[in-house]
Length: 441
Image (tube, rainbow, N blue to C red):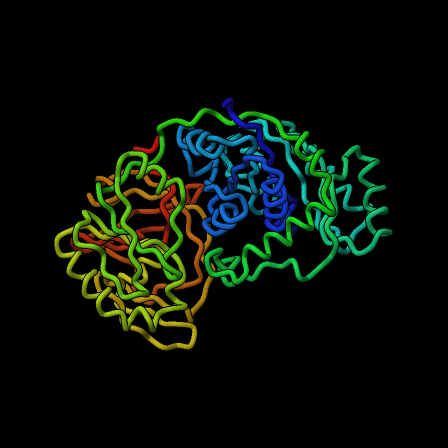
């Protein structure tokens, strides 16, 4: 099969309804029998799981800042494998990214330009009429590398409201390919890091089917299919290498944030992923060579994790002879203690000298470029890693000294952020989620 064409669902800003439109479109096209795959622009680990539920196929991240070209193309190629169409969902606004060279900003527009995917622009028109056309026009002409295939209106109040908005858009030559009414029942449940995870969303498939009904009634699906264009690259073997041959990976409602391209790379290189559930009081299996605790929501399950003695004792025993790494939530569980939202402090594994608190909330958000201080599971000393932080928990303990730190870190623009994460013995952890390392290029 030749590489599939694609479409990028984007918007001028966050909160415009990209995810609602994307899931509705995906589910409706799947009903039609279209073999489609999803993708997510930027560092998001919740939306891809919703894409998979809507399409029946895995969805990968595409990140023009964090991923070297070879890795980015490998992820795009894998996204298009065995597909007739790729539907990518943007993050934030269409042109939002960091200050960097062309094509390396992390913005949705970089992905549309690189693969020639036309943009479906979602416009939240609540509180606007003809003025919405000025916003759409700005998105269309801001970056000459991309093309807007058409506009999908969201939160339309009435037929008259739609006519006014369309009148403005017709003046700037942008076709309307559909319009969703203002309807609160379409909202998916949310929590502090975004949507409630797909696996925890009650009646998820009924919600997706309702979105598909909405798409069939309100979107011009034929025109949207006809608008697809560009080409994804052929899949290549440039995905992340596994840290070990048999990897115990925590997987349940408290540990679920692991980028799909990481798992795909590990499996593709022949590694075996062995899931286990800390919430079910399962220890990392003894036959594994390494243990990985992904991010997630341990702050919502701190009491249960503190009482999971089989898990905690097994994790401590595992760490005496084999490497263990924790990302974000996993890092918190590897620490001495975790304070929940009610101010109750729960003992954790005690494998790293860090105490964390979800009660003392502060948003930590952004790309992280890290250089490892010492050899470990993630690489040798000096290895460059790129990741992303998105959490509200804070560290109560002081920043680590060099003899205990995991890495020296900057933000995406090179501003030094000091030493971050911890390491002790075979155990390492940090608040940033790994996206790419030197070897992934």
